[in-house]
Image: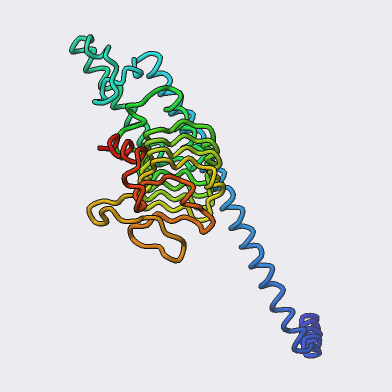
Length: 283
């Protein structure tokens, strides 16, 4: 009897409710459920990001420690595995010592190739700074090792990266203040929104690069920078503006004054002394 009275009271209470009250009864629990799921998802994403950052820091520390050990204890500085940058002292080593020295160089090269695929922009900037400061030119200038490297929003200011091959590198939003990139290869590199004040790109090869919205471009040393193309786009004018982008274009923002820079490959600049000198260095 008590149960019957309770059910009867519940039915009477429900019958008296308006459509809006019914809607509230349905919406509120649904909103609370969705909010809970959203917060849970955000928490999981944040945790994953923190774990990834922790992993990357650990991998970077491990790389730097290993490379330092190879430099101090395994004669990595001789770079005997590099054809162009090996130390003359390599020729005085015994066959066994030389074989070991070459193996050490190969290990260091493999470690570097592996770590840049793991790290984010700032971590990779630290790798480049370490290689540059350590004088490891053989690794630093190894062919294709840094192709497509992620340097997004990295702080590369004041680094000496002369001669590096950064083909297809992601430098979007990077700080390149007073960065030295003379004789570097920057084919297809992305410089959108990068800060370029005082950067040195003397004799750099910047074919098909993108400088859209890059900052302080008028303070960059582009003297002798090469915009001439390859077999598919031979000797074309490769400087265009935003709406004129083409397959063979190096893209600059509208405010860039090309007449203030002696950039090679722009019609009458082909025969200039500085362009001729830079071309000869690349040949």
